Length: 337
Ligand SMILES: [Zn+2]
Ligand SMILES: [Zn+2]
Ligand SMILES: [Zn+2]
Image (cartoon, rainbow, N blue to C red; front, top):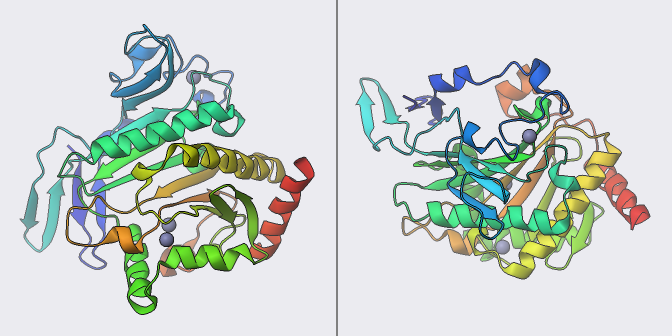
């Protein structure tokens, strides 16, 4: 059974999940798109995954059969389990917690051979709608405090299968990285009386780090990007929760996401990357996340390896100047359009 253990030095929770160890980390023959077809995410192989928890599918088709366009299933090698009761223990000197949580896979397309970026816009919109639906639904469980949706594309970015998919992990604690952003955003809000991210948008609109603007959204390379070509996408409308995204915003987000990912793919020769969707925690306390947090998507190309210095300090060494990265992306997009 998985469990959370709290690091007494930095107060960070670590998930210890022995079951994940059986996951096929050895990609070998499994990784190549051709040789892995059909994979467990392919249509016709629905019985190879745990039963689906959600899907968008054609009329008159049944769950766990063909006919789906986006399909959500529990992870076969879960880091956390929804059936675990939520218990926190004092473990002598330490603190630990049962491995309660939700770990799902969102299969983005029935097509084994297409990446998210290559899907038609309507299909990317469907994927984003599924993100919204899952976040909303899991928010109904009062034990869950946070829901992180992320995507690992490519072996180097931690994906174990090439068939396009994203991951959802919902936890009973707020992750430390998110807490750091929340703390900074709250301080800024208390000092300046406005949202930190809204201020960032205003600042970046006139700066050379702007990559692209779509109705309601902006993509830019952050001032202190940690990684080469790191790109953030923010909605113009102040909103802390992705679960509150509106229909027109889904359409714009699909467009800007496709534009940004296409530029990264072409310019950097199809790099592995991660993206993470940072949202406010589920509102379980009097904490007013809605005022000072602003959801956003961070795209992190995996071009550099983290080394001892980064791990040891939390400093990052970025060999590409953010302004130059933004210029290259922007130029590429302009030339294409
Ligand atoms: Zn497949
Ligand atoms: Zn804002
Ligand atoms: Zn963030």
